[in-house]
Structure formats: structure tokens, C-alpha cells
Length: 83
Image 1 (tube, rainbow, N blue to C red):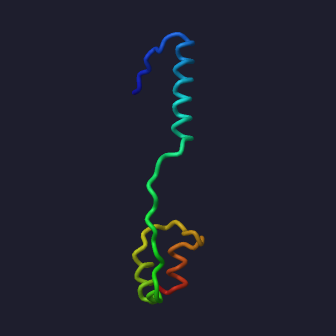
Image 2 (cartoon, helix red, strand yellow; image 1 turned 90 degrees about the horizontal axis):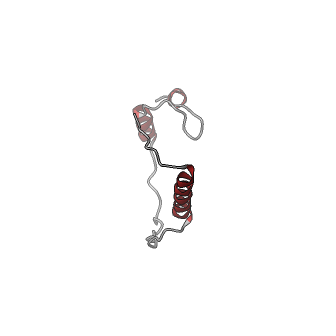
Image 3 (cartoon, rainbow, N blue to C red; image 1 turned 45 degrees about the vertical axis):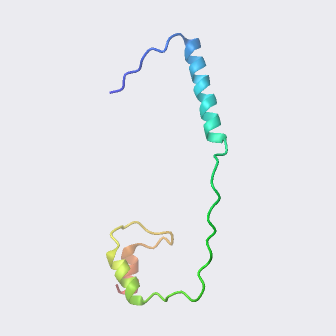
């Protein structure tokens, strides 16, 4: 259970609130210094083909029942794909 301390008269509370809002505004709206990102070169050559067996094995291992971005559930994939 949280206990709140008495912060004093309303004018003191208003000053404290104003100070917190000013500090949080600057924290949330200032650009943070960042280091440059490392350049990543694309992979050259053809990609490895994914086999039907790899897909079926992956579908069998899925425990989540929520649909993915396509809206398709694991149960549907199993029924359609024969996994």
C-alpha cells in the first residue's frame, strides 16, 4: 500500500508539478546523442530454399494459438498444409 506524504500548501504543489512537467518535457523532446549505425551490406548470391519439411516442422512446434499478421491461425495452417 502506497503512502502519500503531505507536500505542503497548494502553491508548493503547483511549483513542484510545474518543475516536473518542465523536466519531463525536455527529457521526452530533446534529441539524444547517438553513434552512427554500422553499414550492413546485402548478402550476395541466391538464398537457400526453404523445404516443405522445414515449414511443416516449424508449424508443428508452434504453441501460440493467436493468428499471425496474415490472420491465419496455426490450426488453419496445419489443416491446409497437412502438417
